[in-house]
Figure (tube, rainbow, N blue to C red):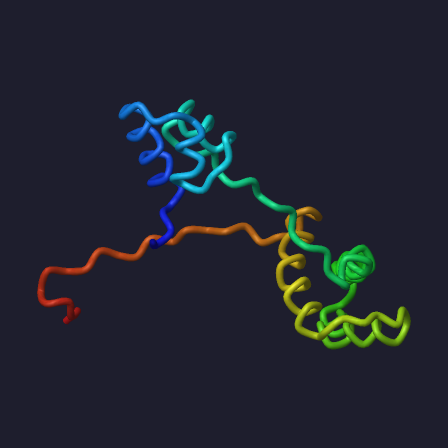
Length: 141
């Protein structure tokens, strides 16, 4: 028998309940515990899944150091700022970090704009409307 979604399972339990089935019969018929039967009878929608915290990575220990480097680069001349490659090599050489280049690259790409906004140095986003097109076939003459 194909597995039902939780919504379908709840509907089936409620349908069988209206038919007069006992709790133990629900458990055997649908292969669930009494708690699931009780939840299905109390609510027509299953409660949403709990969001799990993101798993810890090897980079977590070094995130404050990377943030510090990126904050220091805000005041440095353009040519003297750290590239992702340089940040990666510093982590490996100075701290013996066992992380991949890709992990550092993705973190820096996500974190750099956030640090710019936090420091107040982020460029303001401006909206420039496009001019309306003429009705003469789209070409200007």
